[in-house]
Length: 629
Image 1 (cartoon, helix red, strand yellow):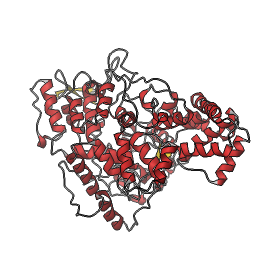
Image 2: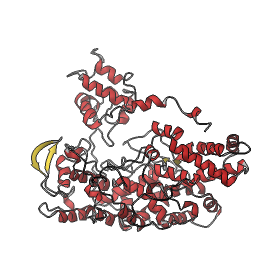
Image 3: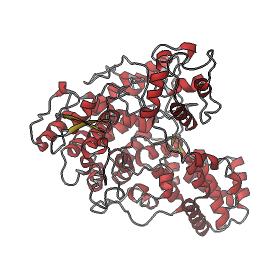
């Protein structure tokens, strides 16, 4: 592609080499250093020199450390200094060279931070049970009524709405993961019937195959399910794909869905079995502890990984809690290990919130799982519904009401909104499609997307509207396949039977990226290997992704296929017509005149397959294509 190499930034290469350095473990390597030497003066309400180290955001704002540049950071200079006026800490033991080296590596790696961690003690205690939020009659959409109070409190005007075309693109990508076809888009935009947006939402959700193909990726990430890879060769892992896909097709109620995971049959037991790793592993990686970690994270937004080694640094969960949950699934007495060392004590099975009910530790394993499934989905367990409602809000709006979504102990930026959605979800019979429809039909969802200048982290958030979101790996690949006609001919996902036919036009009845094995391009774009639970994917562009989209052979081949296909179908058509066609297909809008002129300059008067590929490649690299706006 003749436009390729001038656009490849040379500065990517040193960054890529730096990324090979072993990542610093914040919780086990950095937090203890900060707690020992810095916390007494710079955390939890004591901020000498106006320096707060409570959160990563505080460090960034203080500029005491420069991201990626330890040598230019005041923090490193002061811990090295022997000048009594500037040395840190001013009293007590100096940092050891090993500790300074760790801090320097941490800064050079842009000081990674454990999501939800803060040195500041919080007084907020998340409620366990449900709370009803009173919505006055005739108030309009309940979500918008709740947010109207939020706008008033923060002296904001409600965000502006978006066009029909922008709405169609957003809701189609969010609900079924596909770009709208140009013919469908134009018909929708030109129609004037009432409530056409509500009808479109229902139409998309009723397309069982498109919905299931799309949400399979979300649940594969959450349930650590993959079609091949670690553990499948030697039987140390079992997938649940056929059960999961069938559950999505039938829109199985979420509480029933979870009960079938916790009290599984042969086709759904892979989740609680976890991965049996080869060789000796750390005590916190055995299948029983994986069970404790995964159940806590997926269904309650609790990070039990820290508490699987020692009492948590992040919240109030203890080592005993992690092992007590793990003991529910254990076939034999489970010895407690602290930091991978034997304690000589054994765990007794119990639930995270005994006020909802208890597990009988002397009951057989199957009965303990029955008790657990009942307690997790207990009618008064508001944590269960809030966690999932928060995940769906995050998926559609770009950020959770509680952030991060796996730290549900954090205070939501709007408790009424979260409690309302949790109660709505429960009253709907835990119908996921109804909850998605309810959020998507609000004016809040249908308002103009905003972009944060920087991630506010766990700090108080003022909602201005939905955030711009990156296309997931699967959404990106599906969009490219749809436009280039390069989708594979058969699925790899072992469904046990053929999926139902897709609704709509023939162009959309293609094999989806969720249904095939991951390749290098998908992994570069963020599709995880799913050896651990993944609830959110990275929102920032990586060096590797930039390189792969610039010169990677898989993407290069897809674009060339698109150029050849377009050349065969269009021949020597008017270049302007081709430009308009691709803009509608990829961006869901027509180009403005300046864009037409720039595109025609690439295509020339008689476009060849190569120039058509160049043009498609340029479109695919546009932020407008790669974002859900």
